[in-house]
Image (tube, rainbow, N blue to C red; front, top):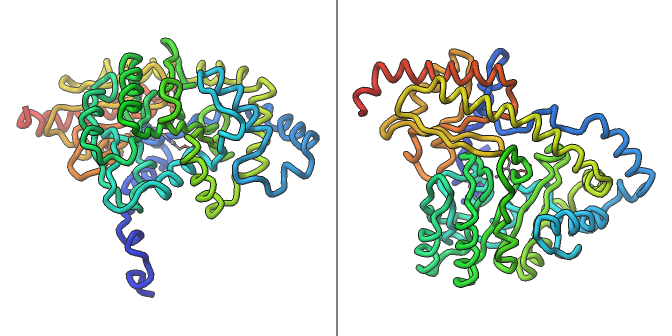
Length: 402
Ligand SMILES: Cc1ncc(COP(=O)(O)O)c(C=O)c1O
């Protein structure tokens, strides 16, 4: 069958993600993969899942298995109001929309806000899944300037002053892929800039609970409530397989998010939502979070010390206080894809950073390393092998780049 005849122009324009191929190779037996982006299975509260399921079924009976409101399962939305209030986000129950993962919010945002050629401001690099959600609608990406403390507020100011931006998409805390966090002073300035320009920010926050050191920072939502769609998820604090995410959006947008969701999946799995609600209101998250942080903290320390020990001169890397990723940058002119194969042959996988940019030939000298899946010993081994692959390339070609 001729798919060109069948496909809508917006579908035909989509690219197959080369990252999928990389992740396939990374899952080969014997490989130590720092390429994925998923939580360690040991972080899931497996021992209490049977008890949670029993209490959900006895409390709600058939209602936990029935169709439900598009906006979300009442008890979960209620539990979220208290959880969010403790984070400085005030949201009434009916201001919270439950979605199928935070990806469900990003897809709906793309659908209701982006027309072909509309400008969307992003960090570059940024979360690939957001680009995949937005791309079908044909946005033009405007990249904000950033450094180790995240987006530069002056850059946001300049971009908004031009007056064409539909919305801004940021992951302010322990960003995927860089692990970077926007500091407090910049959050305050970004909030003030959004308000002054009456602009809309989509604040994607899957990682702020995964803080292993340092102090919590306020969300930008808490600083500019009327100008931010706050996006959260249970994927990293409970289990991604349940597919429960949520958002708190200004009223004008929330209505359309709900209508859009009706056409996609009617509502998010009722049972998954009931479990997430019970996890929150029964105090289980409070008990599980320290375990998750204790699991990941030594892995973060292991990757940072391995990078310092093994990487050849000329490389720098982010030093996050949480999250799941470290971002490594080589000298300009380096292409990390050039030694990717060599690393794979040594049974160590990473993701070349170019995949996290909206355009071609960006970030060639960068790579993303995940530290949540491998053991500390394997993290050390993998970084050593990646460093050796870089070193081999170094000896052959890197001198010419200096
Ligand atoms: C920044 C960011 N946003 C959203 C998601 C999607 O998460 P989920 O749909 O499982 O909530 C991810 C997943 O890795 C992510 O890194």
